[in-house]
Length: 165
Image (cartoon, rainbow, N blue to C red; front, side, top):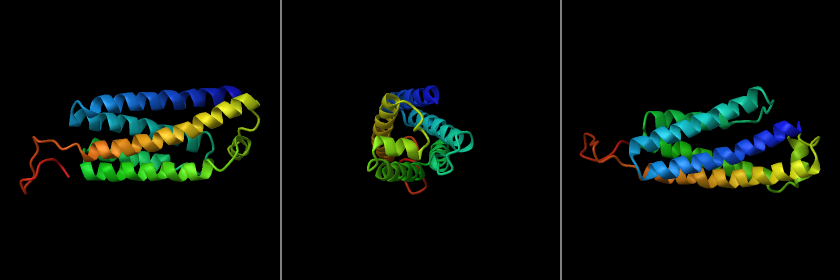
C-alpha cells in the first residue's frame, strides 16, 4: 500500500504542475489551443476518477461526471457551457475541502483506507492531498474565468456578436 500511496501522491503533484503549466501557457496563445488543452486536462482527470471509482473502490468518486462534462463542453468549444462546467468542478473541489480539512491526517487516512501506511507517508500524503484540493479549486476557477474571457473575434454569430456562446 505504501508504494501506491507514494505513487498517487507524486501523480497529484505532477498532474497539477502540468495542468497549471499547460493552461497558463495556452491562455495567452489562442482560443482553440486553450480549449484543446483544457479538454485534455479534463479528460485526464476524468480517466483518473474512473480508475479510482472502478479499480480503487471509491464509490463516492464523482469526478468522472464533472470532468467529463468539462471535457465534452471544451471539445465542442462551447464557451458558456465550458464556464458552467468549470464552475461545477470548482464547487465540487470546495465541497471536498469542506469534508477533508476538519479531519486530522490520521482520521482522514483511516476514512479512505490508508491507515496501514507509515505515519510519515500518511502525513506526506494527507498534506499533499490538501494542497492538491486548494490548487485544484484555484485552478478550475482560473480555467472558468479564462474560458469566459476567451472570445474568438473571427467568429460572429447571427446577431453580430463576437465569439461563440
